[in-house]
Amino acid sequence: MSTSVLFDAPGPRARARHRFLTVVGLVLILGFVAFALWKLGEKGNLDAEKWTPFLTSEIWVSYLIPGLMNTLKAAVISVLLAGIFGVVFGMGRLSHNAVVRWVSTVVVEFFRSVPVLIMMIASFYFYSFNGIFDSDINPLAAVITGLTLYNGSVVAELIRSGVGSLPKGQSEAGLSIGLTPPQTLRMIQLPQAITAMLPALVSQLVVVLKDTALGQIITYPELLNAYGQIGSYKSNIVPAMIVIAVIFIVINYALTRVAAYVERRLRERGRVTITRGAAGPGGVSEIDTTLIDEQLHKADERALHDR
Image (cartoon, rainbow, N blue to C red):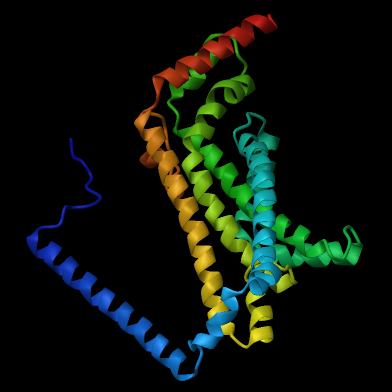
């Protein structure tokens, strides 16, 4: 039986070529960074007095910390709502009812295709013109709406992929003990799919956190918006952007490490894990039979109780 090879292990010459290209790439990147720093230094953007304000509490208390709190607030609310949205429409895409499945598919595919910024702007004008929220809440509501619709659609697709990646015997086992298809999905398949996609969900937090910066376009006072205020106040836009970029990098790196830790722990337990971008049979490890037995036992007890 023939097998398809997706990637051939590189030989000695290929490895040497890869090392050479890696060195060339690093040299080019370092050269670009050095050139950029040199040009910024020529313009006086890296002078010591430009960085001094960041050593005082005024800039942090008045601009950076409030901006960071607004960023985290929008991200946390969006993640919670996106989780609810994703579970509802993810299960809808798996429904045996053709109408529910069709409507859920249209909703998920539509909001996955529309850029987040467009949804934020459309939501902002919709809320403003119809007076749904107070004027000071409209930017936050629009940011949350855009992030919820897009990321909720991604979560829904992760749930569909997670359930689809489970062995067919899972659904057959549920049906064999008297559960209906919706009960089998809710009691047996969905808990395993959620466990499987935990690393992908944590990684999605990075996307949500970064996309909150788009709220600057609709006047939401998030962290990135603070660089303009600091630059106007202290005439140090470049240092302000660098400091804010470092804050974003530190937070996103921490979230990435959390995702890696969760995935490693799940793999050590032998459970299914789905990484972002690989939600499918190719991104799944072995199934934990202990988890399956637990879910089947619980489902059996519930079925007997219902009878």
